[in-house]
Structure formats: C-alpha cells, structure tokens
Image 1 (cartoon, rainbow, N blue to C red):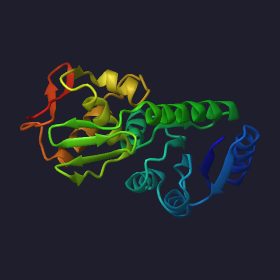
Image 2: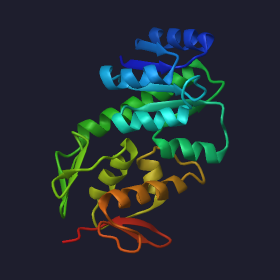
Image 3: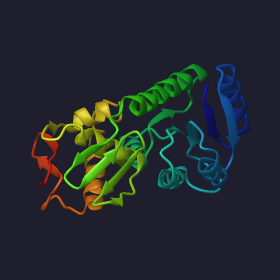
Image 4: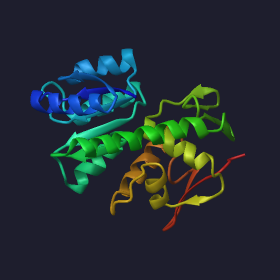
Length: 228
C-alpha cells in the first residue's frame, strides 16, 4: 500500500483512477491544481505522484521541476504528448516514468508497482556512504556533499552520480545509464544522459574541458575518477 498523490483536473479521470488505485489497496490524495500538489509534496511526503501535464494553474512540466526542487518523490507523468522530444524533456525534468493517454487502470497500476519497487530497492540495497576524493555520497539518506558542503541535486542527478560513484574507474555507457538508472531502453533517449552529466558537472564545479570527477570517453560513455 502506498500514499499516492493524484494531480489531475479532469473529474471523470480522477474518479476512475481513484477507484482503480483504491481497489488495489492504495491511499489516494486527489488534487486538481499544481499549487496544491506542491504543498502536499512538501508537507505530507506521499510515496508517489501521478502528475497530469494539462493543469489549469501551472504547466505540468514546470510543476515537475518545482517538485524536484523540494523532493525526490517518484513521479509518473500522465501525458497526451508522444513526441520523442517531449518525452526526453519530461525525463530530463525529473520524471521517473510516464504513461501516454489514454491508458487503462491495469497499465498505470503496473507502472506504479515497478516505480515503487525500484525506489525501495535502491534505498534498501544502497551502501551507507561512498567517498570519491572530497565528494561524499550517502545513498540511503540520498545526500551528497562536496568538501563538506551539501550539493542540491535533483532525484535523477543524484541517481546518476551515485551509480557512477559506485563504479569508480569503469567506463559506463549512456545506454547502460538509461537502462539501469532510468529503467528505459527506448532508442534516442540516451540524449537525456548528456543533459544530466552537464548539470552534474556544473554542480561539481567542473567542465567537460576541465573535468575532475566525470571524464567523458568519446564514443563510449562516462567514467567517474577519483581526482586525488
């Protein structure tokens, strides 16, 4: 059982989804506006969010970015957008998964189970701390510090950083990161990896031209290096 925040302004869809989720044993908290959802994410800490993009007050992608600035709660986006560019944008903004409308109750329940299973496995199996030079990553607490100062990372940025830090000295392909961190294998979506690596470099105080931790191996992937 999970507490699921359902962010959807269509009353018919809300009623149908709420019924399917409740019948499956989940507790559902339905809201129709992004502002309400952001407050609940901050104050009530739901286990998972289902986020519709067509909200009346704030664009759904902007709402997703706002959620990611305050929480690493798993988010499944419900969207009618089907283009590759739109999906890459959603994943880059911090979505854990997405479903395209229309979808069945069974489909969304399967996606919820998979996302929650991955989130719980990541927490249970993670080492207590990983140290790479002056970078310290605490996977169980989902916290990272550089020279004693906390890094403000999105959920995906943290997941990528932790995955690479656990494999110092190994070259990791974009496809492997997409498969293992995003649990996606769709052609073309590896581009979103480059976006996250770029954001991580900025927060680690390095550039592609002058890397310290994240070294690109052209044509292969990226490798975490201990700079000491």
